[in-house]
Length: 213
Length: 242
Image (cartoon, rainbow over all chains, first blue to last red; front, top):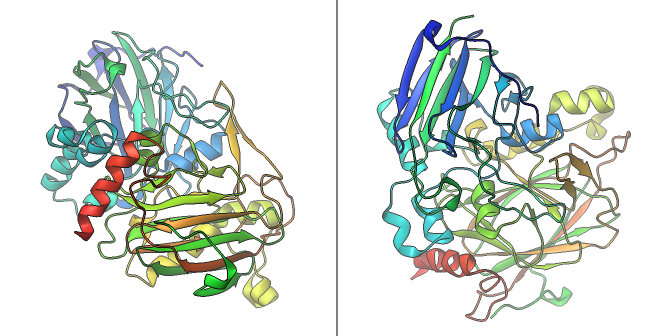
């Protein structure tokens, strides 16, 4: 795990917004800008998708990213690849050390499978994604939702091929920072999950900051 | 009740040459045996609800519902709608990769060099992503419908630090995997090599496909009872057919 601190000062950020748990966020980050997600209270999963801002059919590809770096976890130095093999963003700083890209986003339908049929009516990440896309007038819809990054989430794979949801390794004040290598649209669902012990059943806000190059 | 594969039950069979691509709608209650004819095959696969193709295989939901990073007997492939597209009812191979995606034109060119149709005719170098786009196009689908896929017959494991290792020899000549379809499912396949296959030669292997009428799963079904999550997933699926 690579721990790399940032030299950027929040006072110099050109954008600074606190996103409550259960809310979505769709925002363009321009090529060369640096984007930080700050885990304010610790162990909050931040479900995130990236798109080429000029052609959303080009988008984050978890499997291409995993294969190209030969490792399933994301951390400082990870290059997040698009479905066209281009670099969307590079993680330039990270004080958490490991982020998941296998676990995907919670959804009403998957909650009914994973937990219980009556969990279907609880708020979920895919609802947040669809809410953002339904309002964006950008031509994007459910077709554009694919395997996402879960910043600050810890989902280890065992050598035997198992998948485990481990306690988070994040903490209040930890952050991940990435430099945009092209103009990207960033779509976030700040996870509202109340059934998964990894956030102690307590979804919390995150702070989002952007710096110019 | 599920009828296991017997050669005399075959509805049809077909052999995909190495690197070929294929798509077909498999009906609920039918199954498909995929057979690695020579050993070392890789079959990249995508699955869609044939009646509502916006519903599609979801890697993350498949993995987390079953606490697995790979597929083998007992596991099922979930759609993004909490339903089961298909189930692995038999498997002589033991491990099918879900994490590594598929080859694309740049990867194949970098690793194996160029071999165009003009020069090589049907021995040209195909790649899995372009193959998938060709097949998806036949059903009105395209780039936005390409999601994380399954790679049948290939094994890639991760160590404790998350580093991936491709395991050669995972599938021998004659190894097979049987998929039972739980809804009418558009199946899209490419027989191109796995993107992490260390073989320096462009040597995609043929795969035989054999379909039979297997019936639908009963209450005692192995995949249904493999995990409590799957019991709920089959319930969600069967609501479509009541």
